[in-house]
Structure formats: structure tokens, C-alpha cells
Amino acid sequence: MMPLPPHIQFIEARTKSEFQIGAELFHEYVAKEVGFDQYFPSFEQELRQISQLYKRPKGCLLLVFSEELGFIGCGGFKALEPDICELKRMYLREAARGLGAGRGLLQQLMTKAREYGYQSMRLDTLPKMKQAIHLYKMEGFQLIQPFYHNPVEDVLFFEKNLLEQEHNAKSN
Image 1 (cartoon, one colour):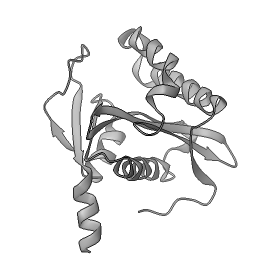
Image 2 (cartoon, helix red, strand yellow; image 1 turned 120 degrees about the vertical axis):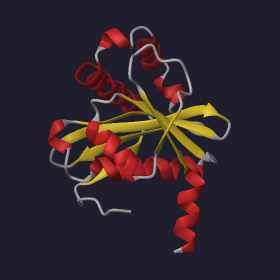
Image 3 (cartoon, helix red, strand yellow; image 1 turned 180 degrees about the vertical axis):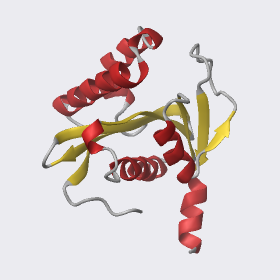
Image 4 (spheres, helix red, strand yellow; image 1 turned 90 degrees about the horizontal axis):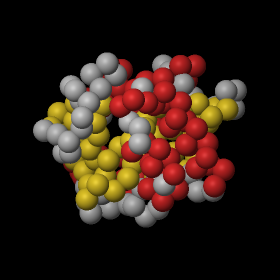
């Protein structure tokens, strides 16, 4: 794993206030990066259920915190199938980009997903999210066929075998 700057830490959301911070970051992410017209009303339902969808033992929400900047991002996963989770809402504010926090966040989420018993992690993203796509590919995610119907055109779907990374780490 790539070392993080010492002033950045990941906090697993467990309290009502932590999930509220996550919901605010989700809202900011969708408003700035995606656009509400594509997600409403399923997004509003996700926000109402955030503490259920992204909590142990099936899900996880990590908040990215910087001593200098406060809460600067988030990311999570939720159950898709018994051994497959879906990466959701990976987002860093502009001021936090380029510090290694995105890679660290993704690696932490993959580690937690393995700990929770998931064998595979899937995600979807928009083609305009070039930095995110580059990160996903660098971390071993591969393009796959759609795993659900998304009404948004050109959505890309990726998957990573989480056990493969664990096996490679043990054999090195």
C-alpha cells in the first residue's frame, strides 16, 4: 500500500453524525460530479438509508479526514450479492486531490471488503471520470459487461477479484 500523508486519516462511519457527514459528501459528489437529474429519486432513497446500506457486516462507509481541511471525501461499499460488493460514492474534494488519498481510500475499502468476506468488488462510473478510471485500472479493476440496467448512457462497469490481490500479496 502507498503511504499516506500523515495528516490524512480514514474514519469508518458508525454514528448518526458520521453517517450525516457521509450523506452531505454524497450529496456534494452527485451535485458536482454527476448531476441530480440522473439519480433522483433513487439517490434520495439511498441518502435516507445510508446508515443501513453502508454499515457492518454488509457495508462500509469511510470518511476521509485531514487535520488541515476537515472532512475531504468519502467512499463506501454495499452488498450486491453474498460474495460481491459494489463500490459507491468515491469522492474527494478538489483540495484533496493529488495527495494519494484516493488510492489510499480505495485500498482501505478493498481491504475491508475482503475482511467482510467479499470475493469481488464491482463499480460503475462515467467516462468523464478519467482520474478515477485510471486509479481503478491501476488497482486491478477490469471492464465488464453491465451488472444492472443503468439509464445513463455510456456508463462503464468494472470488477476486481479481491482474492487475487490477497493471493498475490501472500506469494510475494
